[in-house]
Structures are given as structure tokens and as C-alpha cells.
Amino acid sequence: MKLVYFAWVRERVGKAEEELAPPPSVKTVAELVTWLRGRGEEYAHAFEHPKSVRAAIDKSHVKPDAAIAGAREIAFFPPMTGG
Amino acid sequence: MMQTTVRLQREDFDAAAEQRALTHGRTDVGAVVTFTGICRGAESGEPIAALTLEHYPGMAEAEIGRHVDEAKSRWPLLGVTVIHRYGRIEPGENIVLVVTASSHREAAFAAAEFLMDYLKTRAPFWKQVESKSGKAWIEAKGADDAAAARWDKGPGSEAAE
Figure 1: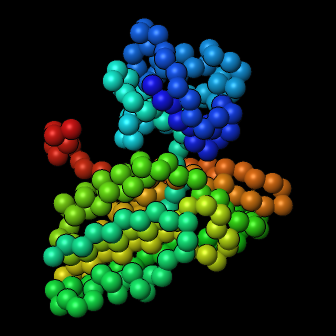
Figure 2: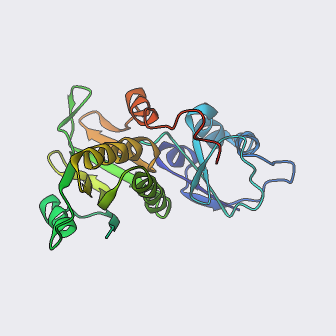
């Protein structure tokens, strides 16, 4: 699946997007965050406060318990500050 | 006739022209509210050089479109225009435009405020401030969440979700 990052999540991870294949045991957004945190310091830094990172699946907001099965694109970003 | 426009763009917009485009040649519109959000010259008391707005292409349009649909279902609107800029914006420049048209003012005022409250907390945009002390991401404000939450439907109306 494609992961995309925005704002300071993008800066901390060090890339805007990447293709990753998490193991089948990773079933929800929260589990994906835990898995990502184990991938390296930059991810641990980006997701050090998981509650301050929001997620979207295929361009719709989702909660941490959302299932990731079938997702084409998962985005992680800080709380929004538009308008 | 319901007219809807949602646009994301780097360049500036002309609020008066957008309002005219929504009302020109029709006589059913009795009220138009035009809200323009402008880049302030200071953030938390510190002068700023510019804001840079990052957005999530595709999702930003979709999310704004979902809220425009929600506004249309709540109020008898005759037209809605939302334009949100991205990229580098200097103090005094426009950031966002919401225009709502209806037969009567109540719907136009309420829908414009609803759309702005949701744009602030749900549309995928992030502001970075440029100032003498460098670049910093603006933190989301609890007051904006509270402003958006007051539009949430109460118990009994959320069964469909």
C-alpha cells in the first residue's frame, strides 16, 4: 500500500510517500502506527505522540481503530490548520 | 438552481467577482454572505514574513465537497463557492473564500459559518509560519475544534452512521 505523509509528519519521516507492505498481523491504523514506529528513529520521532497524528484512508478521515484491509493509500498528518 | 464551485489554487481570487458569478442574472437569491480569510501580519504576537499552506491534493477537494453537500442538506442554499489557496501567502493576502447564497439571510449566514468552522478543523491543510525565528508549523487550536463541534448533530440524528 501507499503511505503518504504531510506537514511535520512528512518532515520527521523524511519522505512524502512510500510503498510499504506491512505484515498480515497489522490490521488497523493504530497497529500500523505501532509497526511504523519500529521501523526506525525517524518513524519513532514522527509517531512519538500517536494521538497528535491523524489518519486518512483513501482520502477520507479515519479513527485509529479503522481496518486497513483493502486500503490503497493511507495518509498520516498533524491536526489540520486550514481556513 | 443550485450552483456549486470548489477550487484549490495557488493564485489569488477576486471575492467580488466570485460573488457576482453566484448571483448574476438570477432573482431567486435574496442574501449572499461572502467571507474572506486573510493572512495576518503577526502570529502569537510575533510579526511573520509569510504563511506556507500545504494541502493533501485530492482529499482537500473531496473533504470540502463533503462539507458543501452537508451544508446543502442542512440549509436551503441556492449557491456555494469555496476557494482555498495553497503555497506561500504573505500578510494582507487572501487565504480562503466562502460564498453562500440563499433566499433569506439566516441560511446564508449559518452555512458560511458552518463551512468555515469545518474547513479549519477537517480540511487537510497545514499552515507553516515564516518569521525571524525561522519556520514553524502552526498548532491546531482547541477553540477551532469547539467551534466545529457545535455543528455536530445531537443524539438521535446519528443513527445513519
